[in-house]
Image (cartoon, rainbow, N blue to C red; front, side):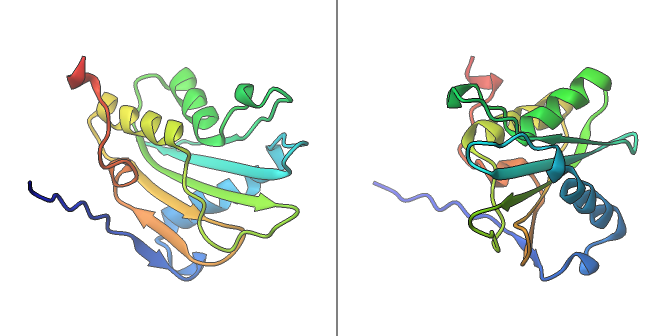
Length: 160
């Protein structure tokens, strides 16, 4: 037997003011997008803002449904908008933030497994890394250099 160690490096910023200007703008767009969330059941709002290679910023917010399996995550809503509007333009970064009416979130909320996989596939599609920013309603901001840091044992097209 042998052991394999997988590690992830996360840059932690204590406030939005300490981020580089481009990332500051991106995170603020994500925060502004929280009002677009349709979350009448959980009241857990999620917003994602994407920075594309061409400088465009697109947002997406979670969309709930009474049949929970039909809910749409903010990250995938934003990615679908990006590939619909700019199908040949790579994603450079994504900022994700949340707001919970019943339980304030003070730590970064990471994407679900499905969103991690779609982000990983998007990196593979465009052959570039996607910088990931995450923040709760307040508190530290986590920055990862690639979606693969969220999904170290990723599944990709090489298996098919």
